[in-house]
Length: 114
Ligand SMILES: [Zn+2]
Ligand SMILES: [Zn+2]
Image (tube, rainbow, N blue to C red; front, side, top):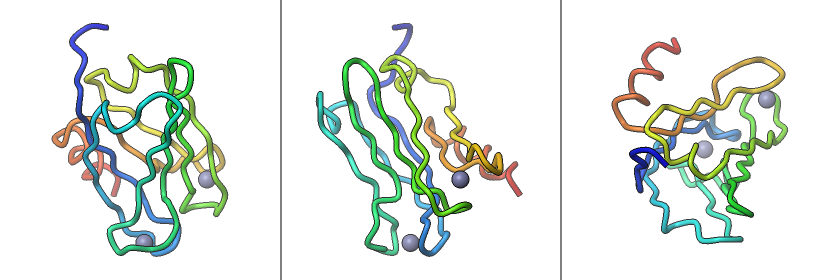
């Protein structure tokens, strides 16, 4: 793993109210075989994003704000903790749903989005 980071940020859209929320999390928040859920900042009941660590990879389930269905993405552990910005897109519409990375990278991606 080249220059990994141990904490990162995730930006996601709420499928209920469509607001975006940014949360910080660390490598220690997701032990093996555990799932970390991310809730809308308006406290909508659903978990907008779930990240489960399983066998050296992360399984990321995103409740899509565009098509009201969950989408599942798999990232190897080193990829999630690399410095580059990760963008998860809706496979149906191509809309950018989730960013994972540094705050400057996330802010830039969000500013380019609209
Ligand atoms: Zn919400
Ligand atoms: Zn979708």
